[in-house]
Amino acid sequence: MARAAASLPGELVHVQLPGAPALDPGTRVLTADFRDLPAFLDFADEVLRPLRPAAVVSLTEFGLEPAALAARRLGVTGVDPDVVRATRDKLAMRRLLERRAPHLNPAFAAGDDTEAVERLFAAYGRAIAKPVDGVGSASVALVEGLDALPADRRSAATLLEQFAEGREFSVEVLSVGGRHTVIGIAEKGTTDGFVEISHMMPPPSLDPRRQELVAGAVGELLDVLGLTDGPSHTEVMVDGDKIAVIETHTRLGGDGLADLVRLTTGVEWRQAALGWAIGAEVRQDPATAPAAATVFLIAPPGRVTAVAPAPDLAHGRIHAWDLSVRPGDTARPLRSSADRLGMAVLTADGTEACAAAVAELVARPVITTAPTAPNLSTAPAAPTAPAAPTTPEPRP
Image 1: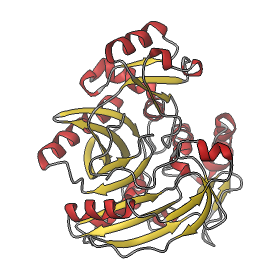
Image 2: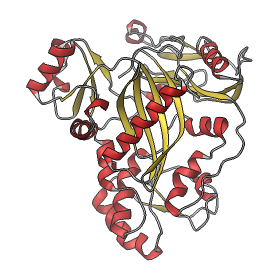
Image 3: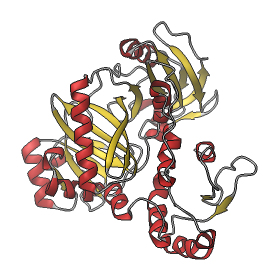
């Protein structure tokens, strides 16, 4: 991201958390704990204001609101803080959609609203429980009945939602002056625990007509939220012609989605997601692959005993290969995106070949583990070969 920012015209200053990884030599870096909002706004007045910035933006989840508030404080270009809050607070977004675009909303209830929770389970039998401010698929669970809802989920920190049927897609959009342009749509593959294990672009199971429906729904969502300028990453469920919004963010998507955009469209998405703030043109080179995918490597919890090299695939090519474990390391139970063990980027000659390549890699036992303790050996193991991502389990 820092390299993408450095390719834009003008002077660049990075504001990083204490202890953040070092950037390239020569990069101007300031250190501030922007998670402490009052202190960070003082920092904006005392340190950033004298620099006379033209814009303050962030593409990291926990930097979104601080950057938006600093931009407002300094009177420079940035994303509206109210829009950022509406996207980061999942309950606030649901309530806004309920008033202005209810057809994009699944039924929902705040965890501490006893009557609404009872109505939700009475109507649908089961519900998805998730943190109101959650990220990275952490602490998302399917609750099969009101009696199965844990006491700690009956709080204002939990959002309960109707289980949305269909296939899940993520949509990358750049908005400029209230005009929303879809940069790319990816189809997701997930485990039964809702952790994402693959993204394919273009989406194999979304025909052009439904892609237009998705683009229209996301544009409507962004209008409701009031997002007029900047990048967004929105997750939707598509069931026939019905589209339900899962969540949205005022940043580009993670999980290598920017690489898939670049490979399949030629758009430098990281650069565009920053450059809008200074009026930079979107850079687009020729696409290098008709289809591409990211695949996340997982294994049952335990001690890593072996790691296989990148394989030759029958249906596609390995473009990038990055493992975060080696023999002797520990694989944790797969409860969030942070528990994944590596990522591969694949390219293929079409969407069908890409889907086949993803299924081929997902089925390979790249990382082998052995239980390290009785509680691990008896715990449900993360699958080494989940269902092919072209036919994922329905996800909320």
